[in-house]
Amino acid sequence: MAIVTPGQYAGTNFAAIDGKGRIAVPSQFRNNVPLNADGQRVLWVGFHEKLPCLVAYGQDQYDRLNGEIERDRETARLRNLDFDEDSEFKKRFSYTEPYTLDDSGRFLPSFIHRDRVGDVGATAFVGSGRRLEIWWLPTLAECAEADPVLQRLAASWDAAKGKGRK
Image (tube, rainbow, N blue to C red; front, side):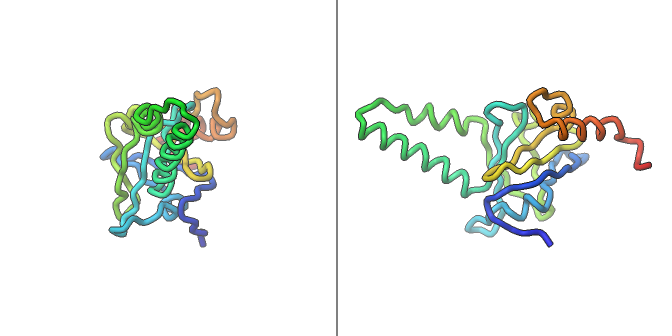
C-alpha cells in the first residue's frame, strides 16, 4: 500500500506517453498531489531552472512560491531596497501552467512543455521533495548532469522499445 503524503514526492517511476500525447502521472506521485476546493488534482508544470526537464508540483507548492515572492518584496521594502516583483514572478512562473489531471492521472502538455518531453515515447518521474522532475527518456539518457543510474535506465528503455520483454 502506498503512503500518501500530500505535497511530498519521493521515488522514481516511468510512464509512457500515450497515442494522444498525454502523460500519465504514476499513482505514487498522483496520489500526493493535493486536491483543490473542487476536489480535483491540479499539477503545476514548468521548466526546471537548470536541467532539461520539467518540474511539477501541487497547488500547495505554487502558493508557497508565491508567498516567498511576497515575503521577499516586504523584506526589500523594510530594507529600503528595490524589488521587481514582476521579474521575480516571471523567473519562477513564466513557463508554468496548471493541468487538471483526469481520472487516470493524465494530462496533455501544452506546446511549450512538449518541447521538453516530446510527443511519443516515455517519461521518467523523479521525486525531489516538494516537487517532482519529469524527464523525456531520450533527453535523460544523454544528459551529462543527470543521475548515472537514471541515464542507464533511460538508455536501456530506449534500446528495448518495441522489442517486448525477454
